[in-house]
Length: 288
Image: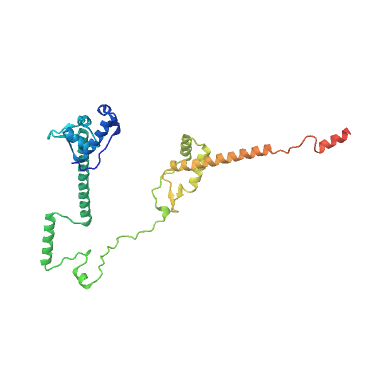
């Protein structure tokens, strides 16, 4: 009997089967009911009358005979019918369950070993015996070995708070370093020629390269971080691309604004209607 309540059904394989295509609609419906019964119980009886009763819904022996041809006899018991595709699904699911079970056991063993290493414990018999021997030898000894980093029984009896000794640092006291000096190994800044060459390779004008060089050289090739600290620019090429793109966008916007202002100036000349104005009045007087 199958342990799984369901199995994978592939419609393309089912509809593409020539044996299924040759069945009538009644035979196909009976075949599907027989498949479901075989999955739940593991087999079907190799008897047409019993098979018809199991299919139910008034299934005739002629329909049951057509369904019987879709199954194979069990090699271990000829009184039973099995389906080869269902048996493949059973084996696949059983293999999948075994793999998941083995993976779960391996994961549990790894977690156990990790916890043992973290807690400093060991479950081996040899370590347990050795630990017992060490405890018995230490209790029988008249002299107590005191570890300065662990509390003694005197501390426990007196109820004193144990404070492990702190090693005094040797040598000169450390000097606090300002945040701006944390990056002592500053990279060598580029020259103006290198910046112009890189800008030309990336499609930027030389004036943008000169603007970037003067901007960073004024700050000794440092920039302010998100924390407010001044840090050396480790990759000036990446920094150049970020600032140069913004600079080019600003220049383009400025030029676009200037062109718009020029068009407004040229189109805003005073408009005079013909026949009006001082000149028109003088001409009219002369004509009269």
